[in-house]
Length: 260
Image (spheres, rainbow, N blue to C red):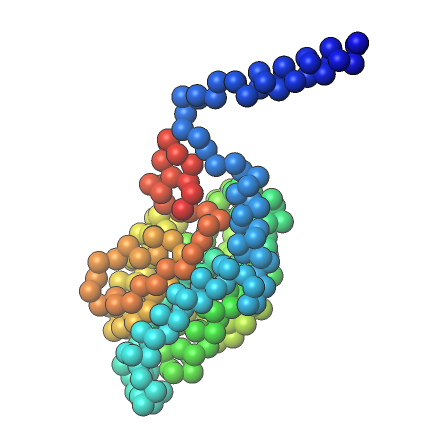
């Protein structure tokens, strides 16, 4: 008899669970565990021919390469390309170098101190399709500039020069062309520049390069801030996907969880 009563109560409890009011005042949010699982599946440890992320990047880079070849055909010799001062601009974080392995190891957390730690390591792998395009551009005689918004987050950005770590990381990842600060790599390292938003700093440097006569054929980045420039001489903008973070102040608002 006791067993029958217990079963009835259990079934009654299940029935009540089905009637719980879930009409919350806030719109439903995405489940963090599910999103982490989705990111893990999408990036798939950056495995060649398997990672959907790399496949999406490849689609973008194919378009950038076609554009580059249209502007600089194979019939144009390297000396002519260099004389025209054709150039390509690459962002670094999650454009040229992938921070996915590090971010995944931190369970997708990115505090200021963790970001600073990343800037002091030299093991971030290349985003393979971008590295391949870089090598093709170098072979053509196109000058490649890296413009990054990197600066120390949790302490005074002027207290330490992190550019040697960045240069070494690029070399370790396979970007083996000449990369020197203020020649091919631009990173905010003075009091005026570190106060600028990354979009302002990158726009400033692109204008500087164009004022020096460079024709910026291709500009590749992962954030909208990489493309905030209305100068008509900056021709080809190509954005690769990044679902790990955003530098935009408007992409995610107060009422909904960022899911783009």
